Image (cartoon, rainbow over the protein chains, first blue to last red):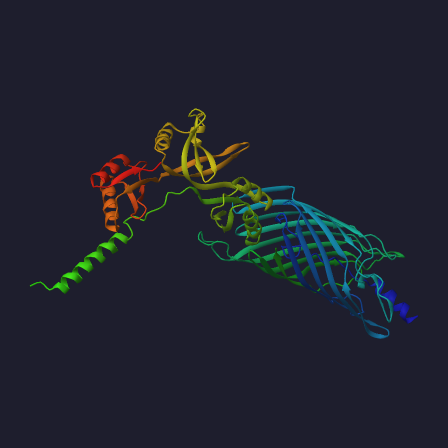
Length: 302
Length: 260
């Protein structure tokens, strides 16, 4: 009886969960910059999501560590293929009538495969504008039936969704030698599995990065490394989750993050870091709100 | 009475000085007449950050004959370092830039070689290390010609004299035709070989070199090999007074003939 009560409470008081986009550079989302034919880029990130702003009396604390690895391949100079596989470590602590409990899980999550195609390209010396739509599919490679001593973990704590979820969007990039502007919109259709369906997600992203060093690009220099200061914006809307009894009222909503960051770019590698800070969180019911999401990563091309 | 030791030492020193002078580098560095492509640069549009450069350099290095690529991010120009004795596949450069995801601007190069007239003197080409370029000027093309009259006269004279010429310009590719070279600069580095018989030592070689420079003041280098009798003459002008030089050398007591 007690175990059943705890399970229901966790399911009812579920929190918004959105996928960890690790495709970018921009740091928090993708870019339309070219990947040359035959090129391979490996991108690794470490992300920490910390959510403790709990409107409910359960004093929930959610800690999610994620390490997505992205493999990027230039099939042609216009068609780029992406494969993302994250390693996840999730832990949720909350107060219950039995006392404070912790439920956790770790392992590989759902993989995402994407194809991005450049449909428009305007090139000038030291400058480019690109428009590239993308299409993809998140596949259920992560475990979706994990359990602990209290029984089956609620769906948001599972490593995988168990469902096949298509995603589509488009990216626009405008890059000069001094700065870069990126914007993207995307929509993910979450489908049902295990009598549960995460709410669909829509995301609108903006990024502006300015070259801080070298302050002035000299004619004589070949290809120096660039240090960029970055400011990104992510507006994420998620629909309510659906369980066996219909819509889950304490789920879904809109979050707006601002993410200051820094990025150092050379010919062969990139290192970067950013912190997404919630500026606005309009979540439904007692959904758990985010404190921050910190990201650090690297990229290497071959 | 003169000291025989001093006389001997003095003679030896004089001989050494002459020998050293004969072996010293000529006033102008002698350059072997050469054919080939040099100073190849490719302007590329769309490159805005260092991470993009890697792919571009990698694709350009895949072009046959390209050993290395030096890209300048500010100017957007890639300088190609060529492999020795390999004819570069210029026609593959635009494809390499495209496959890197960028847009090609112009290819500039300097072609050093010999001029040839084609199709009943209709147009001139330069043949440089197994590559042929059709010569033209944009300003003449607008009037329906390949070259301006002034340039045509100048190049025709050089063609008749079989001069070694260096022509710089931008490349324009045409299907099923040799690429065009839009002339921006012409440097005629005239080079000619003469065979001289009768030189016994370095002193003779030095004497022949002096005769050549006095006969033709535009000669920049006269590389004389007294062992083989081969004389390589370089001139800053478009011609060499070869007949005058031959006569002057023969008047000095040697036998001279112009190499074919």
